[in-house]
Image (tube, rainbow, N blue to C red):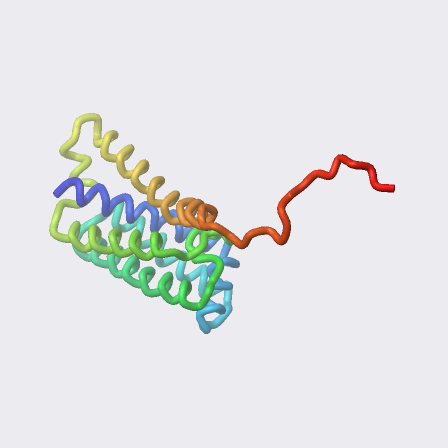
Length: 184
């Protein structure tokens, strides 16, 4: 069960990071809202980011079933948003304040997984309780959570880009050729 709590804590940390990114750089999320037919107001994006950050902090520092359920509910909402963004042809998910993080099935599946582990963690101990029971004040737990959150960030941003780069694109109109002959 503590492994589930670690995954949930990584989800909460990622939520905190994504929320702060929206507050600092609201433009990509604001543009996504417009693409989805919602009001294009940076203040709305900042409010969304503030809610994400607050839920992430509460889930990490306080924990408990309500914080885990709130984290899971946000990730379930992200499943819907990313799915709609893909359907609308959006070029950015708007999640991390980056323009170049395209919405993808990797993102949908990752959000669904993070929602599921957060809902599951609602029945377990809090991240602070897990850390209290570990040697060295839970340093290993904190490192694990940081690494998993970092890997999730890479999966949501770089992996879809890398997979997209592997897709064969249209063939060039004519092959590249260097003509070494002089023309008169």
